[in-house]
Length: 195
Image (cartoon, rainbow, N blue to C red; front, side):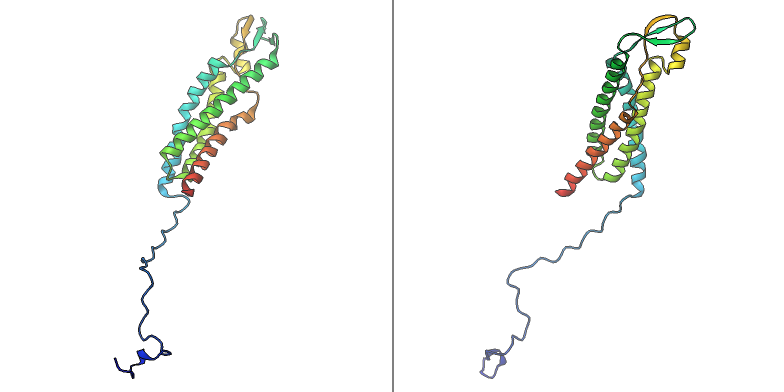
């Protein structure tokens, strides 16, 4: 190489592109953001909601089996009066309902998070709607199967002392099931996205 070659001069810039100090990988294109809801999510919400409702029937049967009854006396003209510690019996029945609803909510939430882990928003909506429906079904069916509501029970009961029907007094307990189910799904989605 001659001295007149510009590459030999210390102040002459390098004529060609400098080699990279290390081998760089081509940039990976960003994946397009998944929309909040897709058409298939509609089926997920519908089927998920319907799948939860039969659990409400099972919950009602468990509630009937575990909850205490309140003794009630029925007169000949079908008037009802409670015998003994009425409030304690109703409170215990409500707490039993709450415990069953919380357990069912956790169970439904875990199963939904496992089966629908790629459709977090749709599964959360299904658990909210299905949980509310199943909780109302559990309350209504438990009351109906034990002879309620009160006016129907009193009209068909013979005079004497009976075990009063189940009736949920604390209405906010109806929302325990969907709240816990949605919370479990959201926690599962957050853990999955953090990985």
